[in-house]
Length: 121
Image 1: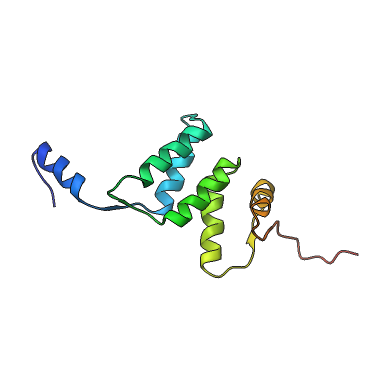
Image 2 (image 1 turned 60 degrees about the vertical axis):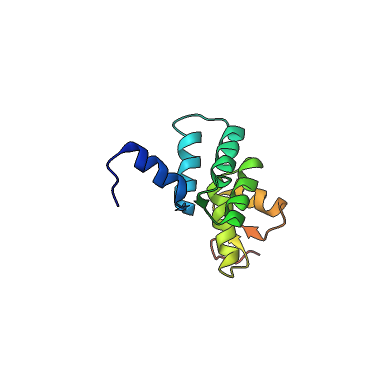
């Protein structure tokens, strides 16, 4: 529905729920930190403010997992991906990103860097 008057648009947006996807929040985090150079703590605060907005619908558990990794010095997206993998039944987070593996392991999650498949020894 398109509302022609700004007052109608504003009122409509205040009363409607807005679903925000993992992808959108990952992009928000990436853009704020990357090209805009926003400090990690400010990115965390921005995402928290967004998810605490009454009209926003989001998988809070997944976002909190992303924030946990972001706060620990990693990438928000890695936390979301690891959470989603666990939710889908995956036992181990696998990534070439050694920092992500280290952070997730420190948080008590099974995580590893993939091997090349060759036997050692």
